[in-house]
Length: 337
Image (cartoon, rainbow, N blue to C red; front, side, top):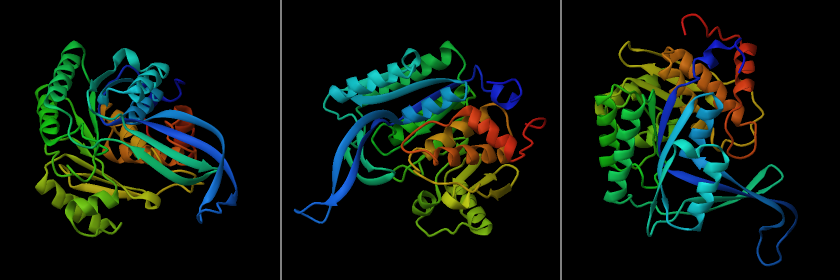
């Protein structure tokens, strides 16, 4: 990383603990030239396949790409797929500070995507979504406290894909632990436990999740979004809200100061939105841990999320491409940042 990008340099040495659902994102690439005679579906002529880290593990990859040190803590199955996932973790250089608990009788989550050219045709999921065992919760909490005591953790990311790792008991135990050590907690939620994160620092749903969580339709306007996040903070107290708005950009709201706004998106050639949320929470968490103001957190995270949408599949953001994008869009992020 270049010294000309001091905001990137501020991430170096930061330790980010990521807890949540890890998975394998498998891609089967092929070519379509005809329709099946058996049913009105395309016939995909197989060309290649590849496997990548997904879910909370992709957050860890984004954190590492930004120059910080990820600590990945999760539960996997006790199966061949877990061995494959552990191999991917090791191959990505994440294994020295990772803790993956194998749970007997549980499936390791795999999402298999069938892709022809840049066209995503089909996804096949293999997973278990019931809560992890009480023994797994105990092991996870022991590991979290051990990591925090061993060396300072700058921020904890809770990455929920509704696959069972983040149960209500687990969520509250982590938030209480973080409060004891004065560690900020950022959350990328899903619907099942949407309102269970009271006491977190930053809460980052997308607009659809916010509407589902509050059980009413919310439009991407400043007035509707402000009203929604204020209502949300009354039900579930937290300091900062970030709402990703897809092609409308990102909304930020600082509850203590009652300030907020919408940051519009950059014009992009959108290829694939998979993994964009992982990138947004990773970059936002690092910037928050580095003491950046929320408007800047939102602006940079918005750029990062947009960048990964220009590439096929779940991929981490390129730190240098992000730095170039920040400079190109003339975000004056040094000084008060």
